[in-house]
Image 1: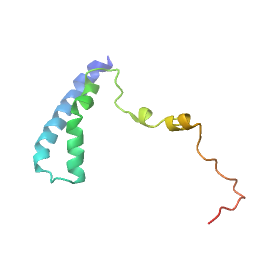
Image 2 (image 1 turned 90 degrees about the vertical axis):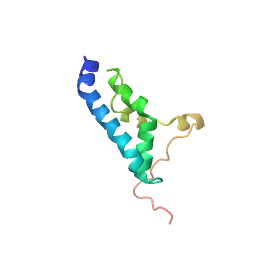
Image 3 (image 1 turned 180 degrees about the horizontal axis):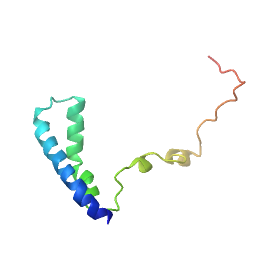
Length: 93
């Protein structure tokens, strides 16, 4: 069901975005933020467009990129974020 809705709604928008990026790319000056964004998106287009192929792929990857628990580096080192000092303790300058 979700896959069919994405095919119907998202594919035309993705197609329009791809055409726009392809037209824009030769017009954008090199080594600018816009140039980097356009090239980044075009290089990863197959991964971006994959969201329309399968309704199980999440459209938003924030849950993946924003971990809710300790980071993997904390697990390796056994450390955790530094605790906040009590409000009545004066911090060194």
